[in-house]
Length: 331
Image (tube, rainbow, N blue to C red; front, side):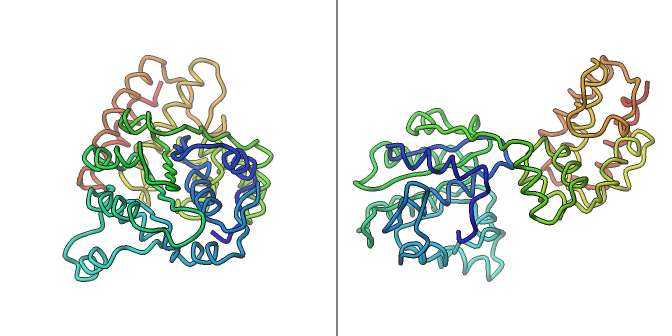
């Protein structure tokens, strides 16, 4: 990771480096930089000349880390995340994917966890021990997690773990109990806005996307560049859906569609109780729907979220969800 840490992560990295322990679980909501913090922590642990604030970024260990070849580091991730984040897959997995024998896994596979155990038992090449990063840790199924338990509890000498998760409640209690937990702190609104503006957003657009993501700056930047919507489209969405118009949802996946509707429902519930909305501006939201109707809609959306990853026809699913929304959003 050659890029500098997000401004709000520097002090958290310094705090973690001052702590003792061989296994840390970094937890907190998405969009705050869990992955980046975990990677920089691992890099600093392996650095040949670390500082209290992180790695030196100049030694051979740091160079190997930056080019994804440090032999003392193991990234345990779903294959889809390994590919997206440009971590190398092992030769067998890469060959299977190249031959299109299967699709990359969205779970952390048990074979990969067994490979990590073998890695932990091999001789280290550097002076600073070995490190394994598990991300997103909640993507371990029970078999994978149970495979790691003994190594996580009693690792070889100078072996460290860093687990990172935005849904740590999904982890097995036996995994959580073997880690020291660090809960990420939120950046200030001023830090988030300044960072987004440094990334090229105008102040007005930074404010809109930051609100749209519940003040999560990394998610805000992702939405700004990849949602397929303009800030003006985002503000028009609630009124359009209240009229039964789902045209602005064409670039959304099924889970994203349900999440969007949950945000609208939450904000309308806030309005029904004379509270301020969280995700949309006040003027963009329909008003007048009853608390009882909105509560019923919220329950139905929770059910929809549980099945959103099923292979439905996306267009038909969105049409049904928009029709349902229109019914509950009217007074």
